[in-house]
Amino acid sequence: MTLPAASALLVQCRPGFEKEAAAELDERAVLASISGHSRASERDGYVMFHLDEPMPWSELQAALNWRDLVFARQAWPVIAHIAALPDRDRVTPIVEALGAARARVSGVMFEYPDTNDGKSRSGFCKRFAGPLDNGLAEAGLLRPTGRDPQLQLFFPDASQVWIGLGSPRLTNPWPQGIARLRMPSEAPSRSTLKLAEALMCLLDETERERWLRPQGKAVDLGAAPGGWSWQLAQRGLYVTAIDNGPMDPRLLAGGMVTHVRADGFTWRPPRTIDWLVCDMVEQPTRIATLMADWSLHKRCRHAIFNLKLPMKQRYRALMQCQDIIEQKLDGIPYTLRLKQLYHDREEVTGYLGRADLR
Image (cartoon, rainbow, N blue to C red):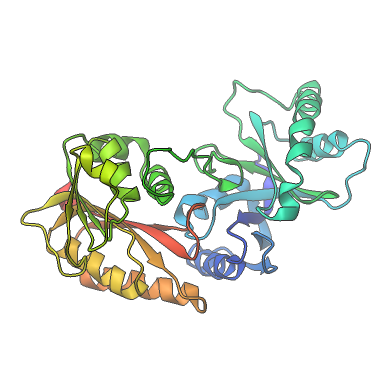
């Protein structure tokens, strides 16, 4: 059976980072030998990568999936676009477009830009879900128990919709790529959500189970007041918190976190630890150098860190950080993953792990 053809890739990103998302898409497409170009408007919260020639949707998503794209919260292939949805019957055009593509789906994900205007469509999507499911089922296009792709719908405004398909394996399970995490009342700061999301996005389930073992040893550089230390302690790791500033007394009272007043750039552990985490406010190249140094000298098996990007030339700054790590660890087996998370702001979160120390 011929797979439905994609005409574009829709990528959702943090509003204000469309330029960086587009630059990354164009670069990655060239490396994947995919011909096309990106279009984006500032603060729209999404980018469209238009293909010069249609290609099977599954091939496009495999080549440019959201996990491998730093600035993408979500990414899926577009198979149709309805520019003018009728006010009274929005179901029929969508069902007809899916039928024309000869595609069956296992479910539907509703999405819209992460902007003030986009959020106003939340209520409509909730009300629209039931009628659309009924319409798809009546047309024989919805099989919830099958292995069909997921129908992706993106409403940039109230009058139009981009229609796409997504493999559950390669599509962010959170609509709009927004991690719905609750702020724990006992956590010292909201920054704990950044590390919680990083562990969910940058590691898969098997990696979390194998590498985040209770009784493990961790170091938190620039720890105060303790949001990241708290997150690790909750997972059963013993944490050495490095910071000249004060830590939350409740965190220290739990016995899982030891506070050492020292400079995070000069302190070193006496032996190899399991996890290094770092959320220090500093030049991104300096953080990248520090993380590479810890990994190079086998001071840690795994590291998660934040790179605070400058206001201008953010993509270039990120590539400089990546180059620093690649050059320092040349010839050493390692894994580097970079992602701008929902709970990040002007920053990108990275995972760095040495394969020979796992």
